[in-house]
Amino acid sequence: MKVNELKPEENFKLQEKVKIEIEYSAQADKFFTKHPEIKKMFIENLKSFYASEEENSKKVDIKTLKGISPKQYRMRIGDCRVIFNVTRKKTKVYSIFIKKAGFRGDIYK
Image 1 (tube, rainbow, N blue to C red):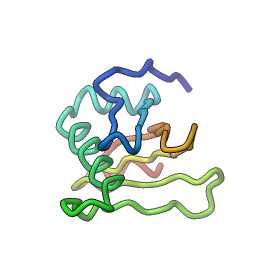
Image 2: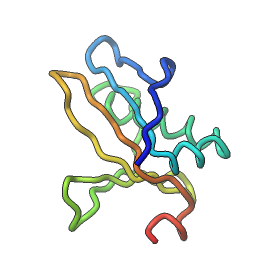
Image 3: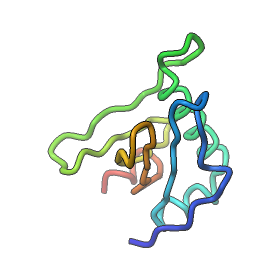
């Protein structure tokens, strides 16, 4: 699976506490290129999810997928789904690899 190089604007820190690095599969990168608004919402939802200790965090629809190892997660954004996994590189540094992104009917095939 091809991984695109990280783009600086897609790595972010949350109040100097947590740093998130995002990588994409070729399929996810293609989907996000066609649907930049979904990509923007995904990044905003991640920021909100990891800032859940703060007062202004919103509820994000993320669920753990069952029967898959290593752990993978699904984020729902309207009719779109994003499948990703999270690894901890160092203390307070997370790497998120987006495996798939697409519409509800196509993503689980």
